[in-house]
Length: 116
Length: 112
Image 1 (tube, rainbow over the protein chains, first blue to last red):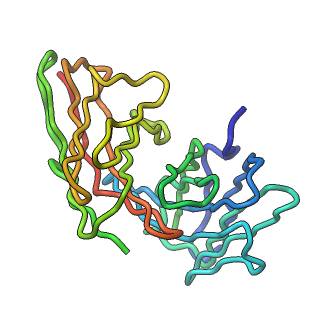
Image 2 (spheres, each protein chain N blue to C red):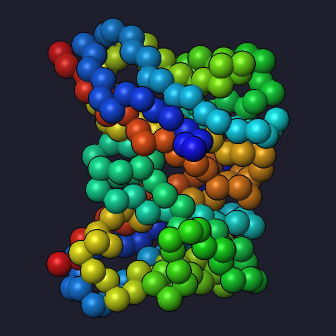
């Protein structure tokens, strides 16, 4: 079974609008971390936001916020006021046991296209 | 935090040859991770490299094809051996520091 599911292969949004990228996860661990990364065509992985499983508040980083619903095992990324430069691939990832020595598991990604 | 310098950033190689990718971290870390990203796909973990011991490989990846060295706590190499066009991918190294995860800039490999 997939550990990280991103059901939206592609999303389209107009500049200045908000967009939500979906992510659900599956783990039996109580402690885990959830991450979102942006990957432009250059291939680098740009960290956007992190949510720990014990964090009670939803994480926010500038225009990015993570809508964390633990009971539903979802960790959706919300991008407010989209910009043309937001066009990229977005990956949701999870680190089970949330230890630095544990690798991340990635979803298949969502391609976001922002138009003017 | 951690800054990872990965090189080369890209290469075009002939089939049957090998390429070694290097990652240098600006701080000491216990584990380093190597991922492969095939065209249009997500990141797949190749192996976990722990200093002083053999790397641990994920299912579908073998040491003969992807030998890894980890001579100290700041450096690691991944070699892609006897390359074929199917090895054309982006290869990324990564480290974890506390709750964060950092990536190198990636190596875009094309095998012709």
